[in-house]
Amino acid sequence: MGHNVAVFGAYGHTGRFVVTELRERGFGALPVGRDARQLDAFGLPYRVASASDPASLDAALTGVDAVINCAGPFASTAAGVIEAALRAGIPYVDVAAEIEANVDTFTHFTERARAAGVAVVPAMAFFGGLGDLLATTAMGDWTSADEAHVAYGLSSWHPTAGTVAAGAVSRERRAGQRVRYTGGRLEYHSGGELPRVDWDFPAALGRRSVLGDFTMADIVTIPRHLAIPEVRTYMTVDAATDLVAGNAPVAVDERGRSAQTFMVDVIVRRGDTHRRVVASGRDIYAVSAPLAVEAVQRILNGQSRTNGVASAGEMFDAPDFLRALSPVISVETVRD
Image (cartoon, rainbow, N blue to C red; front, side, top):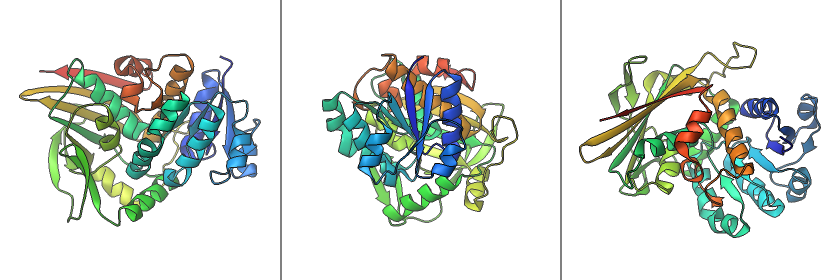
């Protein structure tokens, strides 16, 4: 393929999956990070850099065609790596699930990235990217809808150290408040326990108890380009309980994937009509790698729809993108 892609945060849990995915697709993968010892373990050429050291980032991105940022918390890394990508004139993709970090990317870099003609795609991962692709697919020929609902049916959720750290940063930034997307805007609020409701997932998962207002990056990515004033996300109670326990994922196969399975059930409503798209697969961290790498591949191959900062559903042909991921994500479309 001839393209070289830098992976910032390559030795993190998701970063390792991304390096493997790049190499399997024929890309040159260049691990980048702060720890030379961990980078050396890949057995590949690597570059040492820090998100807070612009000169080191400029050196790390010299001669590469794109960069994928896998190093959280993204509140600490995204801006520095995006700045370096803009200076280098190369596409930037990250796997950020942090709501505030993604808002920052859209707020601070939209005009600059567009002026530079550089594609910047935040949240190009399981949370944020996949939900946006599914909602965009569900919308079809609709130009607006009244509501979008994204329900996550995870069999378990053993978080990585990066997930735990990112969650702590987000809670600190919002001073313990919760956030939701309602009335066409992000709204911060204080409240008690999250409401529990029953969600009827497709038959393979069935009815499950979920937490309402369990907000994920979809409340940033979906309304960036879809005219939907209410975007709500939900998480199965069992998975949310696992997240609080904080036990790390355990690999059960030669690819390093865990036994975790997922179902993402997306419903958009306009009036009395509902459109539904459901995705299922295995290991939310492992599946983030083909999402991010497919995005880079499409940008470099001229299959993107715009420049500047854009979420997955705006940057790419969503149904076609999902079809390309059929080896790892099964998608079913259901309409009234």
